Image 1: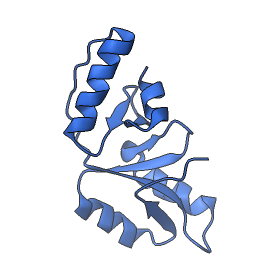
Image 2: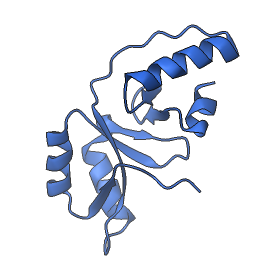
Image 3: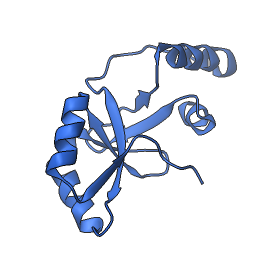
Length: 119
């Protein structure tokens, strides 16, 4: 059910590298409400939200001139903040925009993007 709504673009769904619970990402509160309503109406599911410590998600890939090893190095340093999206692409989960900026400065061989092209 969550995957279907994420495929439609209602929300994003992330599976942390460490841990087993999914993290649902949304731009704002309204998206969570829409998701909860649809899960109730279409699937008969009750939704309970719990806050996450993460405020931002960034898809990561090698920066121009860099390679997969650079991304792996970053992921090993931030293992507790790494997740995979529905396509199994790596996503960095940051607790603040400051943390995103710090990681960007510290790892110039990693490109951080706010959105991902869907193919």
